[in-house]
Length: 239
Image (cartoon, rainbow, N blue to C red):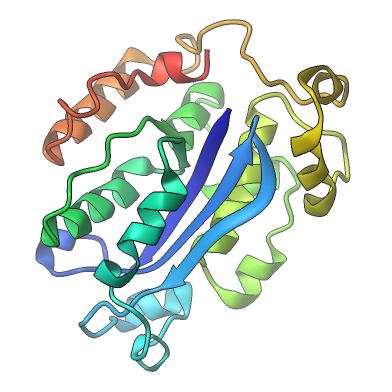
């Protein structure tokens, strides 16, 4: 099963107020394990980047001045996504921006399943912080690169791929990224023997509340894709 872990960096919080995507990072998974294939691009947002945003991701106006526009890379981006499910932390934010960018250049909205790891973590760890940093700390995922260089779409996608694998059953201690790439060629029984759970034995209805599902459905309506994504049921995606 192919999935794509996705993250974006933006100029701000609201595309309807003029904020734009300035970085996209996407990482291919096969049976929940990174294959080493990825899509990564910085974008010219055609506007100034606020200082408060620069402090988070350290991407400056000068850096993106010669970078392509979203319209220049959109077909390569969509080709990388194919028809795969997307794994995103706080999917509402990233999808809102992607749908806006697609609509801006008169392209159809995304019609893909989405696994929101924020909702998944809220259901699994109620009462605990479920930010990406907090989840990395919970699973002893090294975030030194993120702390040094700031938030980055590809960096965060790599971190999320490790967190996602842990939430689905875990991996062997000290299993490095390069080593995991080789697992993409192994069969399911070999992966299971290494402690990597590929198929959930039960639906996640007890981990993701009906309230969270309702919120997600309301979010889909706000970005106008509730009909296009009518087959999306977060409590069944990982069952």
